[in-house]
Structure formats: structure tokens, C-alpha cells
Image (cartoon, rainbow, N blue to C red):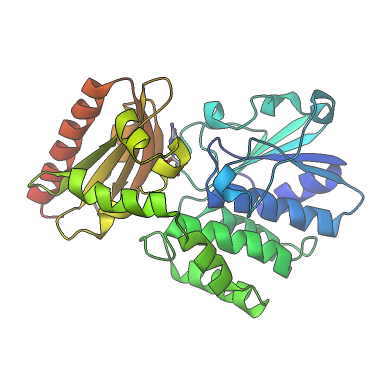
Length: 318
Ligand code: AMP
């Protein structure tokens, strides 16, 4: 683990810096990436700073990636934000640069990079970037930087709902407000859903299977997506919906991908679910993880495993 000062010293050394994040980026991946890029560009206008990866249509309002060529990687510093493991980095040329830094808040299961800064107590990678900037005189927290970082923190804390929200998270958000960030505008933008998504949210409550333990599961397969005219990204966006139910403690949503496999979203308000995700080709935080199920049988098997985790948790009276 490296210090903020060591990371900053490395950033100062390189003329070309490529900042990457994970595939299927969420607001924290994009916010930390673009927030760091903007802070470096503003402090060191002579450096070439590129943000790579594939865009997510619904989040282009927040940040748009740039084209990064093979030549750009040669001799560059590559910084990867918010990405626990190498296979999920949204540009597998990440190792083609001269030097690699990992900055993340997920459990450090895949230790990669020449330097790394991982803080699992941080609500989000965006919070870590705010701390990095706060710990050096070389970078400045401007309003433009804070806009990106605020969106990231809001995204990963479910607008300050999840237990990962700490006093420090609120203090950091308070600094953003002092800089003039329009938090209402960002909150509203992030709260926005299309009518199709709103209909799906309602539908989720109908199709949710709720076990007596408090474990729940919803399957959004191709038939349902066709019926509601939804694409994968729109279907992924309703993952927090079951968490509002009094009857539900931990839940998973299975969203069928084009190749027929299922992208599994796991969420919990107590029982630890990231070991279950890891056992099914995934990973993530103790209370928010993702995985892949090859078919419906594996989806059902994962639900049985979730029921067991929640039942054990209840029995221990945690
Ligand atoms: P998601 O359900 O896609 O919103 O993911 C929830 C959390 O788990 C996020 O912090 C992701 O970065 C993480 N995550 C999702 N899929 C994986 C995976 N295959 N491997 C490791 N972490 C993952």
C-alpha cells in the first residue's frame, strides 16, 4: 500500500496519463475517473491526460470516454480507478503503459499495479480521490472536479442510504456544497428513470420471490425485457428496488445477457454476500456484489445459497 504522497510523486513524473475504470461503469467509476483526470489537467495543463473505456449510454451526461491508441499507452502512467480485479478493467491494454497504479475501495482480492491505494472504509472511489486531492498542495478540489466526485459518492452510497456512508463521507460532500456544486441538480438527474424503467420497478414487486428468511430474488429474462422493451442497461438499473421492502433483507436480481447467461446483482442489508458472488465468477463489497450465472439452474442454486446465508445470519441473531 502506498501513501498519497507517493501516488502524487508518480503522477508528477509522467507527461502522459491514462485513467481507466471498470467495465459497465457506474457513477462512481466514471466520477472518480473523470474527477481525477480533471484535477490533474487543471493542475498540470502541459500533461496529456486521457480517460479510456466504453461509454454507458445512460451516463454520458456525467462523463464521456476518449479514444486511447496503442501509441498513447507506450511510456504512459496508467491509473485504474474503482476496479478490484484485472479482468474487469475496461481496457485490457492497462498493462501496456510504463507504470500502473490501482486506486480502489473494494476488497483488495487481486493485488495489481506498481503502486496501489486501497481503502475499503471509503464509501466510494470518488471519496478516495477527494482525500487524495485534500492531502496534497499539487492538486485542487475545484467545483468542476467536485461535480464528478459528488455524483460518484451519491451513486455508491445510494444517496447516503447505505451503511458505507460515514461522517467523513458527509464532511467531504459538505466541502463540495461549499464549492457551489448543485447537489439538487445532480441528485435529480441520478434519480431520473424512464417510464419503461418505472414500469419495471413496479413489475419487480410482482415477480420477486421472497423467502421467509428475508432472502429474495427477481429474474429479468429476455422475455420480460422484450415485453417491457428494455435493454440490458435499463434492466440493470432497478437493482436497489427490492431493498425498500420490509420483508427483504438480502436480494439478488438476475438479468439475462445477450449470450443467455445471467448478470447477477447481489445486495444486502446485513448478511455478507460477496463470498457467494466470488464463488460464482464475481466479487465486490460485503453488502453489494456482482456475479455471473451460466444458466437458470445456477441462478436458482445461487438463490438457495443466499437463503442459507440469510437463515444462518438470522439464527446467529446478528
Ligand atoms: P453491480 O451489481 O454490477 O452494481 O455490482 C455491485 C458491486 O460489485 C460493484 O462494486 C462492482 O464493482 C462489484 N462487482 C460486480 N461484478 C463483479 C465481478 N465480476 N467481480 C468483482 N466485482 C464485481
